[in-house]
Image (tube, rainbow, N blue to C red; front, side, top):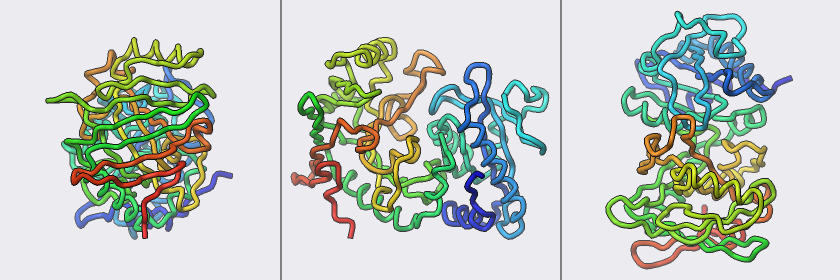
Amino acid sequence: MIEALRGEELCALVRRVFAPRPGESRLAILVDLPDAVVADNADWATRRLIAADWLAGFEAHADSLGLAPSLVLYRNAHTNNGDLPERCWLHRGGPLPARAEDLDPAAAVPFAEVLESHPILLAPTQFSATAPLKVAAKAHGFRAATMGGFCEGMIPALRLDYAEVNRRVGILADLLDRAEGADIVFAHPAGESRLHLDLRFRHAHRSGGLLHETGAGNLPSGEAYIVPYEGEGEPSRSAGELPVELSGEVVRYRIAANRAVAVVSEGPVSAAEAARLAAEPAYGNLAELGLGVLDAFGVKPIGKVLLDEKLGLHIAFGRSEHFGGQVGPQQFSSADAVIHIDRIYTADVQPHVVVKSADLALFEGTRVPLMRDGVYAVNFD
């Protein structure tokens, strides 16, 4: 049996996360569908069942919540944070279709119309829709909880005290806003790698689970994050070496001007990553420094980025313009190549790479210890 949020819990979640405003009357659940390009899988099929269960729960409590729910279906974007299709479908009841090809093209409606008419969105999707929904929110004024890769194992994290999560995220975000740079030392089997991230000219973002303002953010949530300076105007100072454990191999990227420009390690995964950088240079952009806090709440990794990145430090490659950076879909070779992918530095995700130390260099000339041996050195009390 799938673990479920009761109707009362769903309503409490929406009130806590979105703080519905007077005059708001509609809520939408966005669901992407498999197609001929990307086949279905067990987690995806379960996620659709969860979405249908949420719809039923919201329908049963629509009067008390004051929001009429809709279930919106669309063809998947084929990649995380790829652009959404122009058209979608409002589900009219009955079993959910298993493939986008099963939808009637004549019944499709403009996605923009749905976004304009639904001020609150939940997006439990196969591929993360954070980037396109952040951009679309500026035009349509909605608030969206993006839940790319959501699965049953994340349901307990929807019951957290997000007021406290948000408080801790705020402490980290304030430190990031005061910092001109971050210096990180990684330990791994080949020795140590040192990386400097240029944080000038950027503002930190808070993803503490409270979506009370126009925009889009992850749920489950619990991170402060910032886009390293990418070099528009003057060169970026981000430089050094970044190790990432992929499929048991520690791939070491050489970083210059905030880009992974080469792979200096050897092995089959390293060779594949070098080829990927050569074929898609925008993939090598360092798009985010993220600081998750959920480890302190007893949350354990489940092998899904949406949740696991919220546990600790992570660094992302690829698209950044949805976070205030300069790299967007136009820098990639095709729509299907657009990506924003997080590399998570926790013992469960990368057991052979440890954040030995991380320090923030503040504009006033002082340094703040951020992390030691993978654990925050910040006082959250």
